[in-house]
Length: 212
Image (tube, rainbow, N blue to C red; front, top):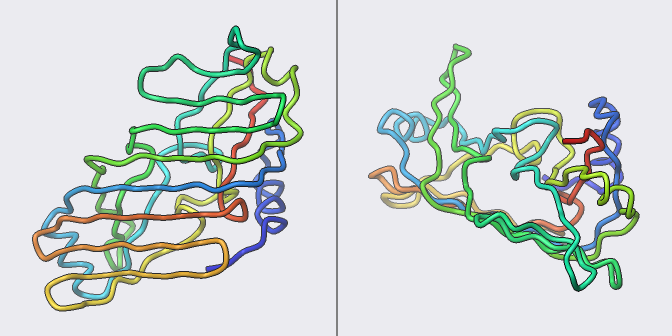
């Protein structure tokens, strides 16, 4: 599951996102989701099909693209009631949080077909904090949007799939490694929770130079 930050950036270049500016980020991202899977999805997982977390956005983004406005204190931020984000040029600190779990969905691929079963999370959110280098005043003043990215051109978040293991009446996926920690739990009634903690090697803010 591990991949280096350099490989992630190289993947973006191959994806041809030529309008995006690559930034250097040191920090972490936390993703928490919960919801309800349909009976058919639970059965597919019980039959051995892996779970997916599909991004419901473009260019590798898994959060809503936002524009930052200059604040009176010299920082940049958003007044969106559902999103809190800020960038402080003085110390280059970036923070982001939302409670909009609709840019990543639970998915199970039906065997021997191109069909995919989808379940939209009912609750969840994303948090990101750290130091963001190489973002310029021009990027901010021209209202280029910023969103969290994983560098993957495919739909799977971070390019991962999650083979669930049966444990009693539940199905569980748990993985820890350098820079990433993932835990997903599904019970027999279809209730599912997912928690991902990712370093900058897996997820980071990215500015897109396509103007509003």
